[in-house]
Length: 308
Picture 1 (cartoon, rainbow, N blue to C red):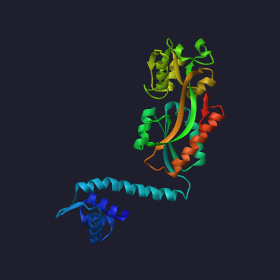
Picture 2: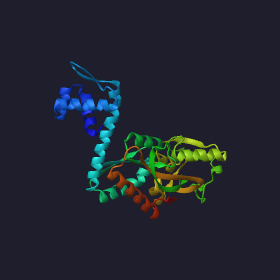
Picture 3: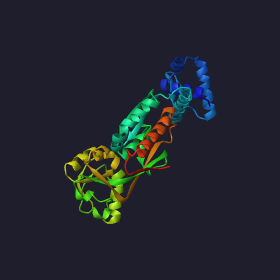
Picture 4: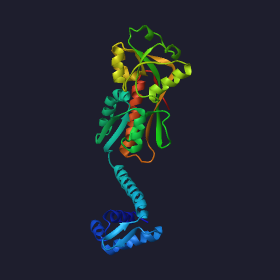
């Protein structure tokens, strides 16, 4: 079995007629017929039912079609990747980020990509943790920054950082003047909950509160930190998130963030293990790690430490 035979087989399975398939392939019909016969003999199955109107694929042919198409796509990608090694990275790369991380990373990441890979088109896709992993597996994004541990074993991961989860509130709130917040004091706090249950920051908070025997007082639920911080500034309550997501408000004195004792979040870069990365994707991993390292080391990512 070789790639030429598989290509002939795929065209014939789609055309369902030897004459039409031979025209598409620009080969003589006897040559096509011979290659299909050799493939059937090697596999030990009948792939087509020949009749006056053409050739109908058998069940075995339909089974083979999906796998043969994948092999040819894989071979084509391999060819393109090898050619790409001889030139600068190019093409689209989609990176999945949570809304909070997108606020922090969009500008420095875009600048770094334009500087190092001018022929690459960066696409930033925002989503919550569970949806980002689904996008990775479906191929909607090439890379994503996820929380560790990610579910499943079909991912290749790279360590990034560990950061404190913080209680975030207005600076004039006396509860925000302590060096650290303790979960056992959360019982009466009015909370603006972000994200979805059993995911990300909210999962860590809910697990920590259950361990401490504290029932959380959820005033309102929102999806993004952008909405949450507006409610906090308006005095609705406090929220729990990572401090870097509200960095501009911290620097402007509109909000304050204090670490919650015992609550941390680990970040990783992930890609799907069943699809080999393009050269542009490999370079994007390095750029993303470099951008994040510079932010942490420069004090632009508060309450975070790099993982080795």
